[in-house]
Length: 342
Image (cartoon, rainbow, N blue to C red; front, side, top):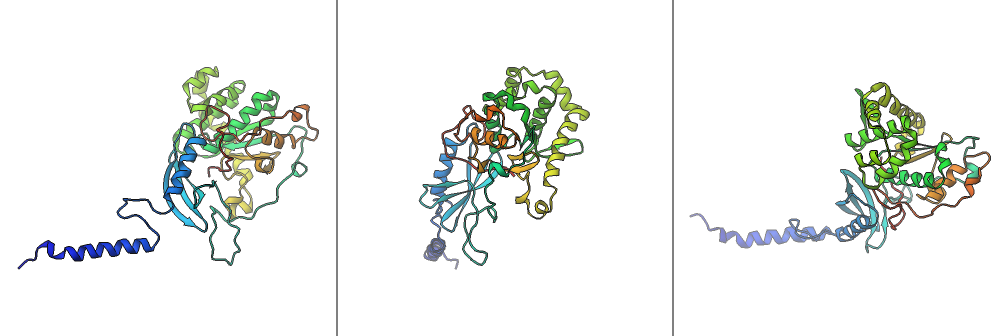
């Protein structure tokens, strides 16, 4: 005789309880996805802070969460790009990056995306000098941190227009089969190409376009407000002897700065390893050695590249940390961000 399913009910309930208890023994508080795992509450609090204070026009979404030493490591996704960040277990302190400083023989894991050795901070004396210095800023146009650097440079140029001739924004990527590639896909690649064409053929309108585009990511309205000749721009972007040739020079520069044994052995040591990356007089430099992602810090970096500093170097600019991603204001009022896209 076939037994009723009710006969097996006690066995089923017992098995389910065992599964739940095993999961709880492993530090989980969820079953069948009904409740949060440990760390998700703290990570979601960090995500809420990022969306409110650090991002405008985009939204970060919470991904995987795991405990790493004394913090939670969590993944956040912004426009299909995933980033690792960290939050203390009480949910009070957010880290956008980490460096593992535990000894090599230790089995303890610290919050870290990569294990690196901290280089000593550079000073103004350490930076290479020139009569006509050039600060190159490598970015991609939809990276939250690349936009942050463009916002800083735009603020500097707005405050001190004569600085523009000493600054060049360049773009990361490559070309395959006459097609520009960028880390966040074709839309970003086309925007990189658009900005290069404006930079090369309508240079006087470049910063007007950038200062508009970094606010909401709009194209058509910014082309209009910056008074871009759209027929010339379209021709440039479609003519391989113009647009592709211009942007290929950026990629050649990117490769030149990365063509070192250190970079080939360890991508974290590439001079142009992520967006943004600053190169002063053909040498890598970190804005964080001079105050972080602020207009004053980046202006100081540039001024340190002069043999004889011009008078504008004494002009003080804002020391507020610039907002990441698209933002209608220079600063979001949030904490400093040291991230990049790579």
